[in-house]
Length: 210
Image (tube, rainbow, N blue to C red):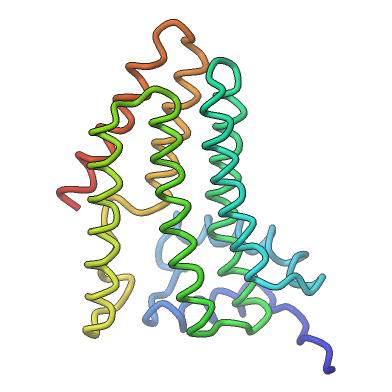
């Protein structure tokens, strides 16, 4: 079996990323460039070690399941659930970075990544419910999230550039809101439930206009 090609340098990674995202140049936006720089720095040793991107994808789902488990324990465990949510969000970006660096981008990987992302999204919504959020807010937020992602996939299939259908309520935003309110719940054990409920409501509100 042939050895995998050496990982791309940073500029090569940004060029390859642009080629897989409708030609959008990440160097034109300081936030995108900075975030992709972080993803590159973390993903490079994984790619050099030959870690398959699918393994990173599945680890993201496992981390999201860990958020649900820890959130159900309540109290101080919500702080650990917050850290696990941040890890899940990082892994969500690392699988694509590893795939790009190793030249392993494929239609199968794209479909697998999208499917696992939706599972992780629902696990995070369930984590808010486990931490005390109202069931109705969680169900509404999860349903609207799935609808948004379905519309995005349909738009991309119709020929729109995937960067062109980016909205205010992307998955990183959903992870940030979940993590922020989980840590708020851990900091206020006596009054954390309203904070968690507010998080679920924000999930539902922001997905709608997106």
